Length: 108
Image (tube, rainbow, N blue to C red):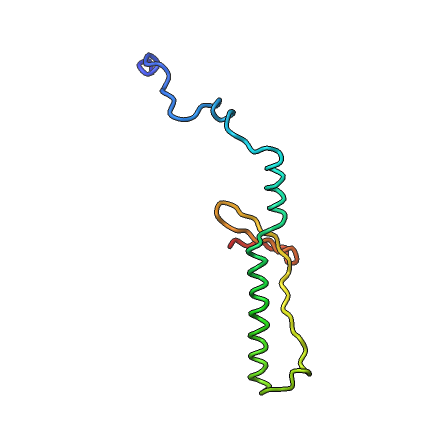
């Protein structure tokens, strides 16, 4: 212990506290923009849900056509598949989905 004290303090291997305090920070306007983007959610998810909705309608119509064998299209009702709204969050390269109607959280 005495020998290590005689050598003096250990050399600094990383950034100092002053370096940390002087780091660049976002402005208040940039912070508000980031928060607004997170509140809006992921546009990619909305696009994916729209694509799945249209694919579902096409597949449903094709299967109905097979089963009914060409029934008059005027008599058919339009069927829609609705996705429930959800919130998305990005955390450590993961996307978290929160489904408020089931109060569930999923990692994608």
